Length: 209
Image 1 (cartoon, rainbow, N blue to C red):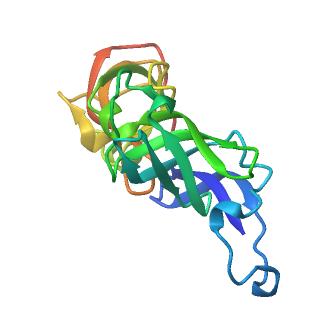
Image 2 (tube, rainbow, N blue to C red; image 1 turned 180 degrees about the vertical axis):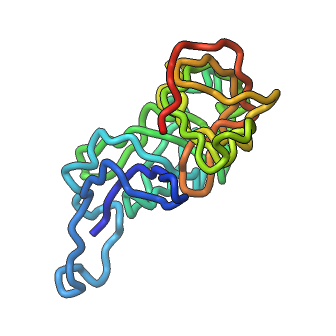
């Protein structure tokens, strides 16, 4: 079966799956047609309207459209340059770009990518957010954050971002409620990580144990 889930690292540095959602039941090979275009396959009902990540696989600049490869869909999604909402004013796409998009199923039962965000260009920005959780980890008492990790909420970015003590600049241990400035990087698992984190305002929160 294909599932979507979030990942959290516990105090033992073990990765745990959270908020697991079933996307599509796996069928036996007897139930799958031998030859069929993947874009003609009936889409899973839960996919329509979902926000997913993918990579621009092909793009025709003279025509302004191409396709997004998305492992979660198991098929390519059609994308048009006019569907890009961030950054604004984009005139062309590049093959290999990481994107985030909302899936629409058109009248032919094929996938369209809308509300497209170009993540590689978005990541060059600097954001300000608030620490919502921070666990000191094994470095407790050493004053350097040890293997601490947590999450930052940023309204401008639109979601929480994972943070690790190794990206903290200027010393100090963050607490819940602290205001921080950071950049964003997308890793190979499509997780958003905070980079070059600076504490710019101390809050009244408490570090979660």
